[in-house]
Length: 324
Image 1: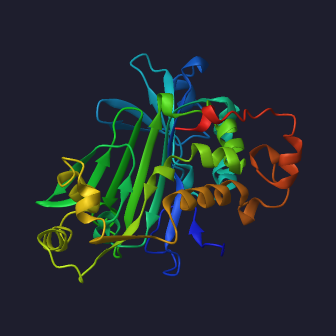
Image 2 (image 1 turned 120 degrees about the horizontal axis):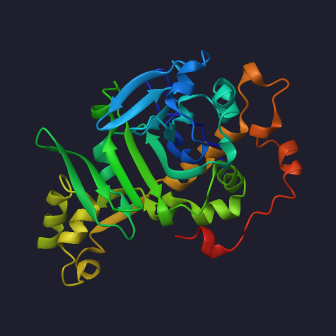
């Protein structure tokens, strides 16, 4: 397969227009309550920015001025959770090196993952992407803004899939659709970042785990050679209704296939979400930042040399561990 140009961070107005996709980690939440580190201890260390913020009812501490890492603390002043956005940086190498002083207090690679948000950006308008999207096994709900549909949520609980018009939400000057998957609890088969990095580097296991594998993007085409009431219904309703919702409406008696199979043609996109996130994460963890390339500590790499060092680390291969 021809190599794809995929960013390891969100598409922005600074991204080359030739790059159509981004696949990245949007957020990682880590448990640190067992370390019993207080906000005062962080503030006393001049190496931290330590700017206090409020996120709703939560008390947070912005640890760095130019790195997206926040610490959540309780009423007693002890930090119980870290929230990271590593893909705000060019690569894992860059993120790790810029935030390295924090990991002298916390063992980054052994911290328990509470929540993992994986995301892809597609440089295409929301209507085009949402019209033919199919998400297996998940119920959907609409997200409205100013009387128009700007997104959909699929699922609930430990796995939520969000599809929305990022052009509107982020106010960016080009068409962009985001597909975001929030994982926690039983939907997270990995315990910590070390396991996640090893999982990304094991293609077979990552394909089993890949939460985007149940999402398919399609082009919709109506067969105009068929003249019937159902053909007219499909032609006009699919102009304003996504395929998955149209199917839900017209499949109450299980007759959708019989009534519309020859009328509606679905052509899968050449590049699907599962491939975008797989390649984006692989590049993110393997690509050293130029500034740190020489003499880089192997503890945060996925290079061939590092992989050889990791042969003695047992990575469970049971299908049940990574399959949804």
